[in-house]
Image 1 (spheres, rainbow over the protein chains, first blue to last red):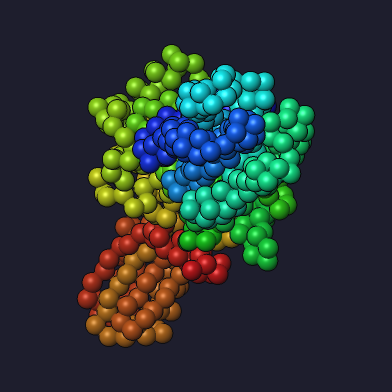
Image 2: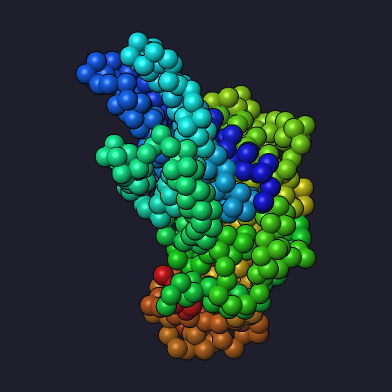
Length: 243
Length: 314
């Protein structure tokens, strides 16, 4: 696989995406909105919590950015594949000396980078605002710590990658963008499950071992999904059945 | 440049292309004529390695379309103007071409030079920074042609490039194809337009799932008249064309065929200008009174319609 071919496709998609204002605003603003909203809520609710309770809540809230990342990749991933379908531009693209894997990897990069940048920025703001909100109660700045580094720098990219790949698979099978987005958005369900388990105390999202186990599981899923997406991307089906 | 042998494509129980055996020479403009659903687009897609074949063989240059390791080499060698132009509407004309130039591995200098050259040739250079989405159908079609040429392919596949264009845009596209012909590029042209095929193509293939005929436009016209002549004389009589009149004409030398319908008599001749006097004399001898005599050429349209109807096409 030639990464240069994938990067050409990704750069084109990123350039096109910049003109889709609704997607740009959605991806850029939601992480910032969450970064402001949650610290305000914590600032209000946290008055009634003990420092020990707060320390359990904070990593779980940070995990919320993993959910957000996987959600925000949906509109972009759907657009990059189904958008080509709408513009009927896949046939000339498939006629170039580019392999299916290179095309899919390029589409994946385009769907991966914008939400990653937005969520990294948003989570940075979140940690800053959280520290400012909780310093009085805790007596120290909670973020950043090693666990938050694992969540943001390892779990978030892996979750995003999973979401992107699921969306690429779904988009290459469905017949319209909206259906693709609705089905693709279901990828957040496992992460909501993990988040809820953390909130219910079934797992400890502040524990590095737990986070690394989740990350290991995601690595396996991501590798499997790459093979599934390449195997299910069928030129013939796309050219003869897409209308 | 293109060689197929028994090339067949089936979609489930439907045979889209049936045992296509064909040869297109380098530097030739080959027209592929056929009704809707005849298998023209499917053939192009198989030749461009976009879809697989069910059976048979197809070679582009030295490469086999059935070998996955040859597919990328074939795609580098060819340019495709699909029936749906499929441009990126939110990118400028320049960026559309630049993107494809990069995918084909052209250097920056090559891309700049070719983009300027082809956009200028097609009258779009002034519009290079406009979004493709703002272009008219004709402009989009021209841009799609420039896109297919950006890497200077030796072989160009064009799938109905003038369909749905206004006459002026269609003429520009046709003239451009004629310019490409002068550059000795091999062009495989799918078209419905018989006049276009006749004017542009060196050879023509008529397809209706099966290949019904191939040849130069003149060869096909000649074949229609059963080899006896390329043109025919139509004689209108004042009375019915009787058996005696028909028999008299049939006895003349080098007459390809005689058909009568009411007072109209059609006579296939190899050289009507020289033979008409004898035909008129035979009719008068047979007791006929002539209203008018007209020489008509058997057109490619006649050939096409005859073959497609006989071949079971629409």
